Image (cartoon, rainbow, N blue to C red):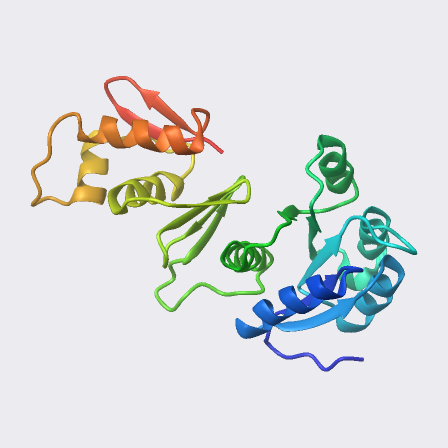
Length: 233
């Protein structure tokens, strides 16, 4: 048995040695404990031993593929609630649907970009309780639907793409997602993003909303005429 401590434990499963080394290096550099396996059968055995907080599984592997391994890991009493993400270059709808039906929580796509990988991993671990909020009680990484919001770097990750937003656009998005489905009035937005002592034009909010919609799509931000805006997951 692997001795438990408070450091998040990540089980990385891939049959490509260079992927294992590259991802392990980047995760270990962030302070995570990383365990590795090279096929689905090894992954099941290792998961039972280390009781990971997060499993990152390749889909296409010898011996047993990631879909089947995910289903078996979910059957382990100690891993029923473990977060599982697939690491794969496959973007087909079938692959994703099959993965989610097998019990996966998310997808991390190849080619791997270290900053995106780390932000996604931290967001997934926050969801499972593997990483706590900072001392002020404010999460620095928010995982909202298909988005990851990294407050420290002012970065938005959506569908695996990393976007660096201008400061006010980022603050506006952060405000709206802080309470999904809540209608924020224009006055609340002005005070929350620009403050009481800053004078801005009447169209300022509308322009920033339009720019956000261009980047994240039209489905997430809803306008309530004469009132304000709300975020929809």
